[in-house]
Image 1 (cartoon, rainbow, N blue to C red):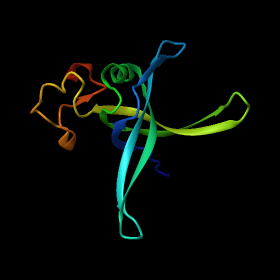
Image 2 (cartoon, rainbow, N blue to C red):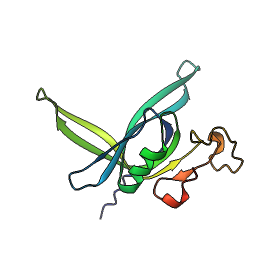
Image 3 (cartoon, helix red, strand yellow):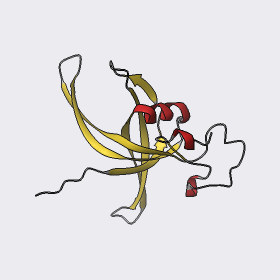
Image 4 (tube, rainbow, N blue to C red):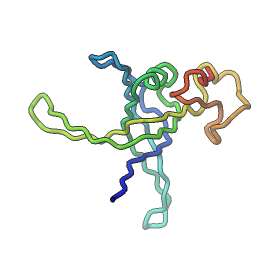
Length: 142
């Protein structure tokens, strides 16, 4: 029996504020993009930087929390899976996009309201500030 695995961990900064929508059945879904930076040494020996952008989808209460507490520039840690989706444009062209469906979103850094008061209880390492899990409404620190 073959074993399959589809798991992604990404840490980056929001490129735009999350957008919240609802399905016809009333389920909440949030969409946002994150930028993930990578530094590496090129073949010429010089250090280079590369930025990749990823579209994130968050369902249910977690999506509502992302829309409520996250904003452009905020650092997050996303745990989820890759998903390919196909659609047709208005002019009839077929497109395929690869997205990350988040199972868990950790809020890193400081929220806008926390930016003024320094929080010494930091779990977020270099990002500083506080953190929260989008899946746990009771743990949101703002």
